[in-house]
Image 1 (cartoon, one colour):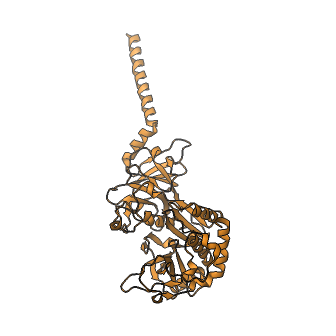
Image 2: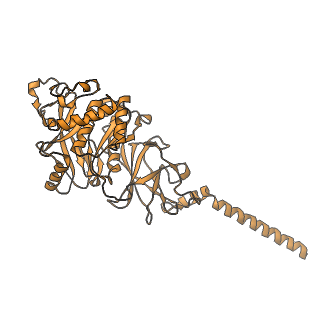
Length: 439
């Protein structure tokens, strides 16, 4: 009897030991633990396996699609101007994307915290189904996350999600005063001569950095871009948006019923704004065929110093666009070697179209990026400071392109030779670039 009882006790003890071992092993399984902890969202936290801090697949491309193929992520930025948030710049379908979540990675322990995002689709979609969006999440307390993943659900496996570095975490002294944002270069862009002239004018006026969101361009243009990249002036951000969406070269859906307008220009401009928020004192938002020409000052630095003194606290300075039609030529600077270079010689176009009655002249901007939340092409959508229209006698945008008023005779145009003030330096600098790349 006693011997039989001992066997029964041993059997029970063995069963208990096996059950406890199985429970401990299953609890250590990271996938099961992930699922259990996220049920207590939003305070859910999961510990990464030892040696694997900030799990997830690092995003390698400039545009990263999520699995829904309705959300496309560009970059993530820290923003502490109103609370402590991560602002993710992206493109979303304005109706189909209802809910997104930020999965934060916190250091030094690599814990993952999940919080629900606010999806703010920019108002300037111009009728297209896809538009620029800010995907904003509050960051967890007692944590400065280094990376974030965006997902449609608070549940899932972080190892399968793309991970984005959260930029602008550290405030640093501005390395440059002026950065030009150009978006987007597309259509096998080949206006080489005008591009080089614009770049050299930017440098004369005070630019140290030009950021270009490049979809495609000609082989010759690639050589020019490579030179400017090697000298440190140009930064290229690849912009393969047509690999993900049907893109239009028009600005409004009624002109071309595609997914998104003008190659996602507004998304690129907003990303460029945040990309340079801690790098540049001012950001200029214009196209490659546009130059903000000061009329009262020799360069942008003295012009902006004067404008800021007159308008303290201003976030946005708006400059009026004026068309200098490439169809009207004044051949004052016919440089024979330039004739073999594709593109427009802006020095030969110094007649601008007059204002049209009851027609709005679009504007482009020089902004303090730290005071802007969202921007469109011709104005900002949300900012912390005022916007000021800069008088035309202070500066205007020289925009050399095909005419908008093609029927006007030459005598109806306004001769404006402001550009010629820079002709000597411009010709010398353009020649240096062309002889290294094209000629």
